[in-house]
Length: 224
Image 1 (cartoon, rainbow, N blue to C red):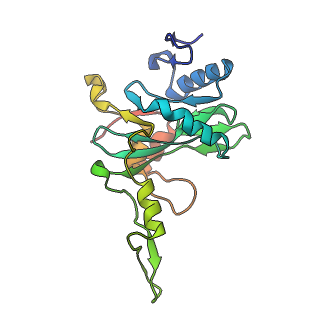
Image 2: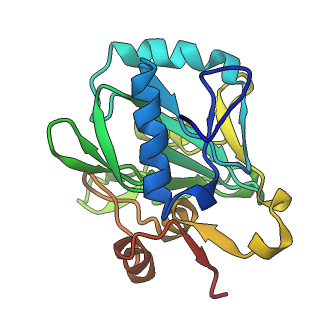
Image 3: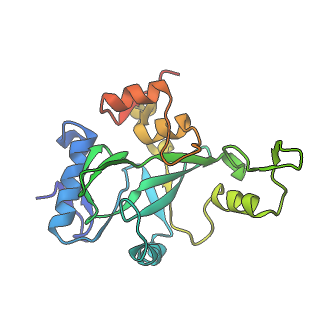
């Protein structure tokens, strides 16, 4: 049985202290979701709020017709400082994922393949885009910043932006944490800070983030 069921049986609360680690907690909730026949899972932590969630079924309906590794789609997460991340593991299809390997950051598919579900920082506070700006080749062969209004720039700005009104997204309310947890950082936060925009499929983390990931810990106290 679930740890706590609200009046809506589709909502499952899992107290962190009930499990040895965040991955075990997530797999328990995921197994229960499959047991009740849920086709999709939306992950929210205790200090997070889903905004414009009433329109999430529209995005799920679109994703039903698309083929992705986890059958899901990225969801924007707004941090307390105003920065925005794009998380690839918040909305997933239960028929695509077998289990979670590292909290919500790595999952094993039914094919046996383990995939990364990163949290990519896409813009800073105020909507300032984060990451390398698109470049194009000049007549002399050098790479120069793409011209405003060009297709690469339009695609870049459309992706590296805050959520729009009416767009489902997550608000991460770290200011509501208990004082003793004020300095605790989740693995997804570490990944966002360590994000290196890749030039190929996948993502990269710095050495500290890799160390924490190898230890299988989703929460670590900040060293700053």
